[in-house]
Length: 362
Image 1: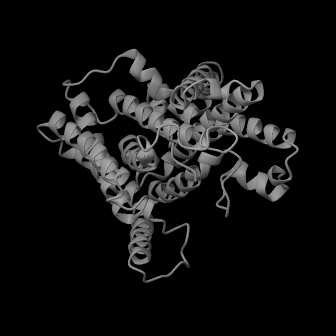
Image 2 (image 1 turned 30 degrees about the vertical axis):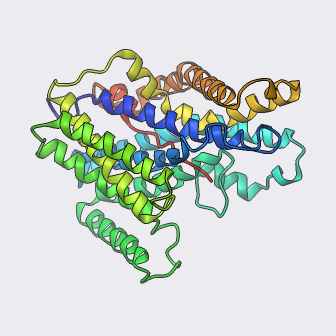
């Protein structure tokens, strides 16, 4: 199979990672004083923030896997840029408009927004606070990665220099050489883009002979790191946590992609749809969970049910809404944009894989 073959297994894995993030946020949001006052899942999904590690690693993998032949090809720049922008922005703007409307209707002074904040939120420009769609703070990092990869598409040499300087800045900040001056650019999370690129290169040029074993090792390792963090044996969200989660995610992606490309793994339509809808789920889940909890509290029935059941119901509501959003909003937008962006057969299949990054906004 060619490197551009479908990798639906990664789609499905992305869906499960998104669900982990949803459960993490569901427990935390229902822990607010007006609801249950404590995490309804206890520490079970405490490590759910690791969705950020999985999705940053996934982003590096997918972008290199889909666009590695575009590197050093200036004529591919327009297609690359358009595909990336149309993958991220249209459905994001739709959900951001919902978030903005809710903020304006809340009549809460703390939620009133100003034009600069709204503009930066819509454009995904870095800022001190989370954007209107809270979890979308990670998309700001995605856009930085896309920009640097765009340089590599325009010029291989310039791209190599840019990525080398980026890597030096990340490692230098981690070692305390640059202080906080590089801030956003040198965030430690960005190393996971490099990890994703590395295993995508391996999947294309040096596929392992035992991919299933590698995928299982990655999944087990990811859960093991989560358990260690839940037990407070590893600092939450620190460099060690990010390194271990990123490494486990990289192994998982390498194993799944290679296994499917070699015909040893097959994913059904449900898994493919769930993965494809995971971007919408990531964007909309905190809004749905918040509205769901508020509705139950307003009706005075939220305390009639065990906290864990409300948490699961809120997560299920988010999945249902996201599936509808994907089916009736996101997919039509992608189909509408297809004639503009398609330059060869299979564009939609590749775009359906092109990624989303769910992650955790604190």
